[in-house]
Length: 317
Ligand code: NDP
Image (cartoon, rainbow, N blue to C red; front, side):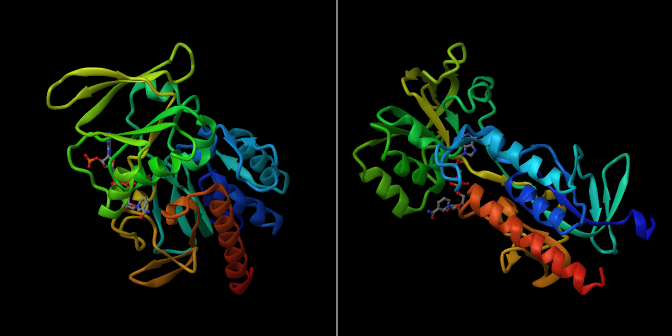
């Protein structure tokens, strides 16, 4: 490894936070390398219309927004590469990123690998993502005004989504695979007290109907105890069954919370046993389980990039 081949910064993830970090570090002449990972473009690339990203009064399609960010990052000198991180060594500097066929060395690292929504993984569900199947009520609820909607899950996310969706839907049915609901009592009570919300516990979704029409028409359900099948007529299915942070590669190398999200200090500084890991920053959904919005992810991507610049400057670059 020579000084010349060592990069100033590598960004893991090409969602909203990673690309914002790329735009900033590229404009600072750091020639960032973005490794796109297993979900190029992140969660925006699987949404449809985004109406809450400032600057787009008529809204913009999620994939188009991401494509614009990519173009903007590339214009200033970002290199994008389709690659998966096999392993990483954060104990030696520069950091060594093992990508299988090659190893890349970098002085700083921005982790923006996001959190992936959990899906039921039914073929019919996957076929209808963006056509009535969604994992984001704040993003897509508005499109189902005056319609009936199903929310899957029994935790706080499902309750929150269901309560939010009552602003638009005439009826929201919460479908939980268990008899027991994981949600906190206050959230569960609030949902139960709502006249537009109904509950179907102990029920699993076998199929999302409407694949031929490219539009959700209903759900084929099965009661887990009786085995009785039924069809629920709805126009949308929202998943509220949790998210998986894509931080497994960093287990043991930095502080994670009990669900595997990276714990950061001052938004973007990573730590190990409470001590800041110099030169390693995290931004976007991988360190944010609370807001999970495109604009907040972009904001923390900007912060991580500015900290990278500051770190390199302090280390004589
Ligand atoms: P949880 O892990 O709490 O709940 C997940 C729910 O999804 C459970 O009901 C689980 O069922 C169900 N589930 C998981 N996988 C599947 C599957 N494959 N098929 C069907 N159902 C499935 O996740 P949440 O996202 O709800 O919450 C995560 C954390 O965030 C919690 O600590 C929560 O309190 C917090 N949170 C707080 C909020 C607030 O305070 N306003 C809002 C949102 C989240 P089962 O029980 O059978 O496993």
